Amino acid sequence: MDSTFEKIRGFLAEQLGVAPDQITMDSDLLNDFEADSLDIVDMVMTLEDEFGIEVPDDAIENLHTVGDVVRFVDSQLA
Image (cartoon, rainbow, N blue to C red; front, top):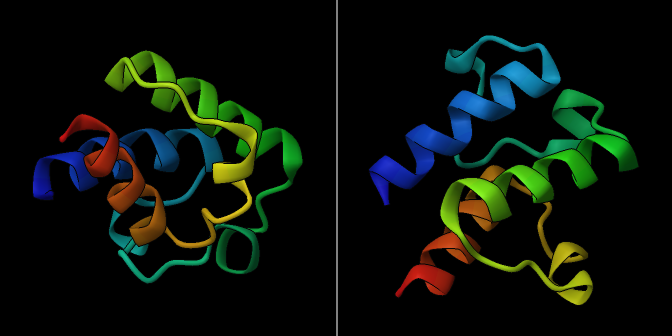
């Protein structure tokens, strides 16, 4: 899980323009980083490319925190 978190934290920091050390498992994508729908689509596309997974539309609705994203990716890789 740590390596998944590190990868996700790295590209989220770049995409959202925040320092990596500001991103924790509890960080809320919309409230803490003011991510908009385009940011979320960008994140999903990056997840699919980086991890070789598919993120269904109904799963996106449940990805509120960075921890949610990490757990989802890990569940798809398991």
